[in-house]
Image 1 (cartoon, helix red, strand yellow):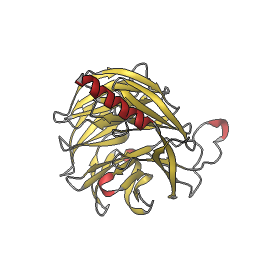
Image 2 (cartoon, one colour):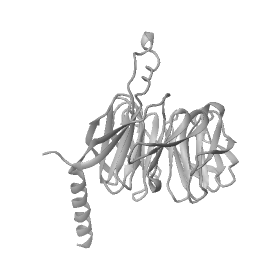
Image 3 (cartoon, one colour):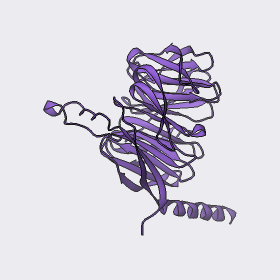
Image 4 (spheres, helix red, strand yellow):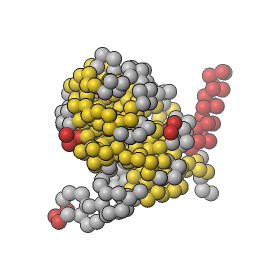
Length: 337
């Protein structure tokens, strides 16, 4: 009887949460030249780190004010925050390095060798280590965040995209070319298990639900694969938009998100740890495929811009129109009647 009562309370909570909808509450015009990549929130300081080709912009999430920039980056992609050491880390993909900077002043402190196509970067608190995900090198560079020194490089056996720390000594990475998730033992700096994300192909974006031990892999094949990372297997797939590049999970709402280049934000609601459904498809500007979530304030940040004409022949990306880079603030509110 007690189990039934617990289930009914859980179900009622989910129904209450799913009665909410998401909307674009604010748009900040940030401007500045260059394309962008990962948006990394820093909830304790209510700021965002946004990669912009040759720098990382640091933006106040409440006002959109530019607080500063981390400069001297050649091919900016990801940012990792190691609060315990007072250091931030930004990948500089074109010169195969990582820039360590001061989290207060944003000044560069060191440049650490990584590997070809250093892209996403993650801080793992239990091991107190930073892990880069090096796409073309099929590897992860492990860094000591206090000393700012290279520890080792781990061969992953596939091309990594984004990943996540489970907070239990394990780090997970999507391998987009092999269609797998790789599990990294953070302390041993070695790969343990790996499993297929099929029928999800080309997994890129990743988010994590540590309460239910679930990983969300956003795939370029138009689905999100949900894995039980304790069992090492996919337990559900859900349709999402095309061209996904960002994913997040808000535990208090029971909602996962996928930001897609086709101009949609897919909202996926947790019904049970093995069952999910698309609760909303929010329209966003085309090519708005990068996002970050501040789960403490339940705000989603999506990058957007206006674009010019596509190159002749239809190949390649259209240029970003100068001064149009902006940030959408998406929040949850009561559903419309």
